[in-house]
Image 1: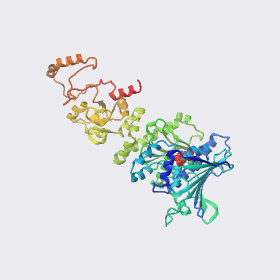
Image 2: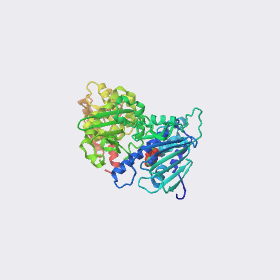
Image 3: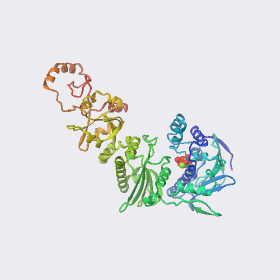
Image 4: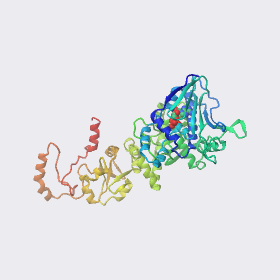
Amino acid sequence: TGTVETLEFQSEARQLLQLMIHSIYSNKDIFLRELVSNASDALDKLRLETYRDKDLRAETDNLHIEILLDADARTLTVRDNGIGMSRDDVVNLIGTIAKSGTADFLRKLKESKESAGQDLIGQFGVGFYSSFMVADKVTLVTRRAGDGEGVRWESTGEGTYTIESLADAPQGTSVTLHLKPADDEDHLYDYTSPWKVREIVKRYSDFITWPVQMAKEGDEEGLETVNSMKALWARSKDEVSDEEYHEFYKHISHDWTDPLETVRMQAEGTFEYQALLFLPSRAPVDLFMRDAKRGVQLYVKRVFIMDDCEALMPNYLRFVKGVVDAADLSLNVSREILQQDRQIRAIRRRLEKKILSTVKTMMTEEAEKYATFWSEFGRAVKEGLIDDPENREQILEISSFDSTHHAEKPTSLRDYVSRMKEGQEHIYYLTGDSRTVIENSPHLEAFRAKGYEVLILTDPVDEMWTESASGFDGKTFQSVAKGEVDLGDETSDEKKAEYEDLLKWMSATLTDTVKEVRLSSRLTTSPSCIVGDAGDLTPTLEKMYRAMGQ
Ligand code: ADP
Ligand code: MG
């Protein structure tokens, strides 16, 4: 045993701990889910390490999670014999919060009212720190697999923690909670009750693929496994409840909110695989960050292989969470191999199609759910219109756009087409920085007067896909700001003659600025507007390219 050092939590970690201590989250039971989840991750990591590093001197017998209760000492301990942590790991992983968006989250929380705070914290996984909702002191003892020395960490969650080396400690991690005094007459918060704890494990962690063991009732020596360990995706569909799916989603996604939609797939034959996918109900903060995590988990015959397997999901569907369990891959498969694997590519195509068809069904059968989906993920999905020409028609089918038809409600293209006026040949759109800017554009005047609907496209990605998309349902996309828009009412020859001199004079005067000055049927009240050539960049694109230095 070495000297005891006292260290400070990183400031964001300190703030989160304060929230936990003052227990802003109403369902305290979930601390156990978090600890079991971490233990399960640690066992997965150990198994993976031993595949990769044959020389790792790790114990791999009897891998399991154990929950020990001591009613007299009022402690609850969750221990695993998984990968464990080195001293640096403990300082970096437990003493700080690396999660992206933490600062942003804390700021929002500070600004929000009390009740909204409850709501917010429910969306932000606090993992290990949730222990401090029920404990006034937490002791963690750990040894990284293969290391000689262990580490003991302890804290009351009030700003600092102590850390010391241990000459010997068992492989893996044990977390001991010194429980706060029970404050409830019917033992609602008595986490030393075996019955209570067993029930929580069953409820939140039944699907964990490692045994969670507790002392057998009436038999101090023997242990029994509390969870069924059945992989959810391997069970028949109607055998699994929504709640079980939701808990599983929370385990793999580290999200605290229920998913919007659960998708199951099963394929037999040449490529045998099972998939259990989820559409989250809100976008992660890093959805548009370059180094954001993406992709689903890959298993091979129930054995966890990797997180964030990007080869299985196209980039524009990077928010989809879940598990794919493939039967015929090697356990040693690497990311590089996966990128080129024909079978993996085939699976990805199938998953992509399934997600698109799921959203399509949602669109017709659960409009409100779809609206949530689109407002959270639409911007990402539209990237698929550029990245994936093969599925462009299907992606357009599930897309929604703001339009002049309704001030708030976006429209599908199918609905747009069904409202097209007699004689209207194109799907009209205008891109710009904001709805207000677009609505005040003189380009819209004649279309408005004619009763033609115009899509209002304000996302940067809209500038890109409209360049390459040919059309939808046989109708081409046409920008109202480009080229000669034929609205069917030709300017009469007399009019042309009448204005000829003026136009000539204007063309000559403006020769350095514009290519041509012509009479327009676009305008009803504005005297003039600037129009691009059909092949020109839109002003926004031009700005984007300039900003990129091109
Ligand atoms: P998350 O699980 O979302 O990463 P947590 O707060 O639950 O966040 O845990 C933080 C980190 O601490 C984990 O990512 C992991 O690296 C480490 N950790 C926590 N518990 C254990 C454990 N039982 N064994 C090994 N590492 C652990
Ligand atoms: Mg965790």
